[in-house]
Image (tube, rainbow, N blue to C red):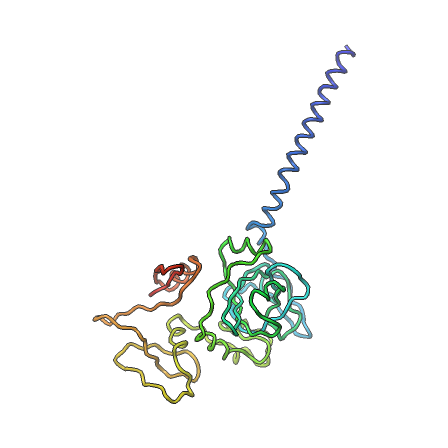
Length: 298
């Protein structure tokens, strides 16, 4: 019996070794792609970390999950990181995604915030060298930074260390309005005054009132208050209020109206369809395709 048992046991032992080897090989071939999918897939954006308040040069910064974050300020280089199209911010959740616009050129890029910084109170965001080069900016370049919810394909590019496609450039008229909101140092909120970062003035003087889409269009097209050759608006045409100090009380709407007095206004042109859909839902408008762009109209 012993002579019969040993070969049987040896056979089972051999099968066990083969099975173990098969399991090991399966684990080796299955684990690596799974790990890569977590690193590069949507799960890599979670958990979102907010963190505790901290101080920079005696100033306390309290991280908070602000959805409608929109500010103007100044950019700097992030010397702690070499590669990738990432950034460092003092208060927004990590990770989160922001569009950064150069107020010098109107060029806009998409960035993934991954670190706390910059560890100075006179800069709004610190960008990795590759991101700074994509924006065409240097230390101290004035910028607009706003939090966005980009498509997954753009998120995946940034998570993989590659650049996302450039966003639509900001028109010169809007750049002029944004430049007027720039403080001499620090940053200024374009929406909620509580978003204001450290600057030389109080949040109330930095904060720009939240503009509805109609008043933004009127504000961009309205000449400065100190220009002397301003043609009075035609009172027979529909008008919109202008929501900034120094401007005229009313600005003409430069569109032809129908017999019933109705007219349409284009609120924006988007290269990303989902962004256009979001705005259209918010203003109860509709989306009209125009070449590679999606126009939001009410």
